[in-house]
Structures are given as C-alpha cells and as structure tokens.
Length: 110
Length: 114
Image (cartoon, rainbow over all chains, first blue to last red; front, side, top):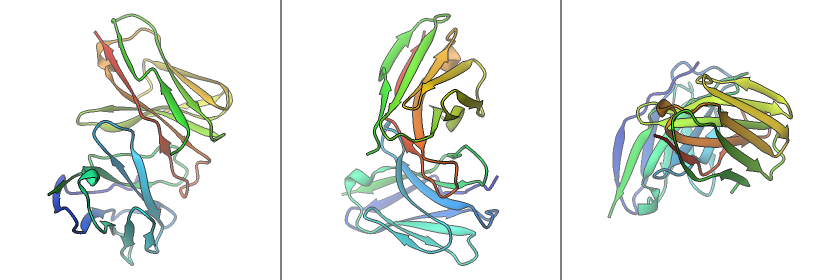
C-alpha cells in the first residue's frame, strides 16, 4: 500500500494561508490522493482529492508535484474553525479501504 | 452533507452484552463501511458491504458481525461486548470502489463497554 508521511502538528495564524505537506513516495500511477479533516470527535470530512493535476474547490487547493511523490493542501485563508486533524490518504487501487494515518493537527491561532 | 445517520450516538453497556449499531443512508450508495477510531490507531476498517447481503471483513473484524438486508441500512453487531471494543465507531458510504470515489462519513457512535 502507498503510505503517507505528514508532520504531526502545525500552527497557522488566522487569516493566513495554511500549507499542509504530505509525502507519498510509493504512490502508483492510478492512485488518488485524498484529504480529509476531523474536527474534534466528529466524523472525517472530505476536503479534496486529485490524481496528478492541481485541484481547487470551495474549501481548499491541492497541489501535487509532477513526480506525484508529494502534495500540499492549501487552506487559503485559515479561520479558527479550520483547527482540526488533517489526513492525507492515498486510495489504493482495488482496495475497499481508505487508510487513515495519524494526520497533522493544525491549530489556527488568533 | 451526505445523508448518513448513525444510531445511537452514545451507548454505555456492560461486558458480555450484545450491542447493535445502526447506519442508515439516504444516498442509495452501494458501498457501506464500519470503522473504529482509537487513540494511537487512527481509523481502522472493521467490515464493509458492497451490496445487499454482500459483506466482507476489514482489518479488525474479530468480535464483530455485520448485516445488510436493505441498501440503506448497515448494522454492526458486537455479539458479546468486551472492554477492548470501547471506541468511537464511524459509518461511511461510497458509490463505488473506484480510487476516484470519495467516502462520506457519519457523525459517529461513542460506545463504552464497562
């Protein structure tokens, strides 16, 4: 399985962009990169996913390097409500599981 | 938000008693999943279903059984609850198993086995 590596924690100032990195050096060609977040003890919330092109939606942007070995989730204007654990996941082909690691705990500070 | 309802939201039970958790969806998605979340372990897949009466085991299936008699309902049963099954349980749904298909998660059930 492709595994991901994320920093355990990060801080960000309110109103600034939060850039969350993820390494997935063993990713295969048809495997997508997903980002979820979990606020306190709520269910994981889908943010964005992509294969090789950069993606943007109303919540965030996803930048994937050309070699696909790493990606960055960008929250353009972080708010206090963005404080959460962010998970970077590679969805393996023909696998019915989505493996969540430890994630990055993002704290947005006033 | 995806239409996923988990019940109950909180339950306290005693060791040795049977417990059933329910996941109900209104999205008509084919795939349904049960995960548990524990400190230091992240989310781990217990069982999943790929259709009515079609289920399979996940990473941590021992001590759990599931049933899916209707598309919209996926039940997780602990036949004889143990303290090690104290956890937060999340249900998830997806339309397919494609790697381009996202999962949507419910709000969770906090289960305490005393």
